[in-house]
Picture (cartoon, rainbow, N blue to C red):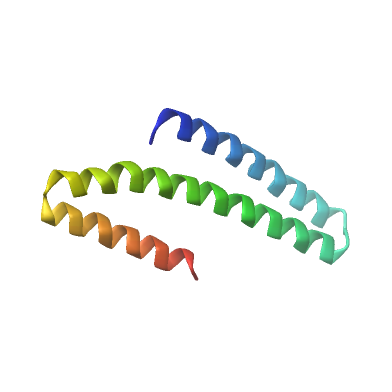
Length: 91
C-alpha cells in the first residue's frame, strides 16, 4: 500500500473507531433507535469509503503489476482475488 493511501485510510479508520464508540454510548444512554440506526449507516458508509480506497490502490499497483509482468498464473490469481472481494462486498 502506498504511504499516502495508508495514512489516509488510517485517518478514516480512526474516525470510524470514534463513530463506533459514539454508537456504544448512544445505546448505553438509551437514545432513540432511529438516531442509532442513522449513525450505524454513517459508520458503514465510512468503512465502504476506506474499502474503496484500498481496492483502488490494490488495482493500481498489485493487479496492474501482475498484468504488466506477463505471468499468466499471477494475473489469474489477482483477478480471481479481486472478483472474490467484489462479490463479498456486494452481499
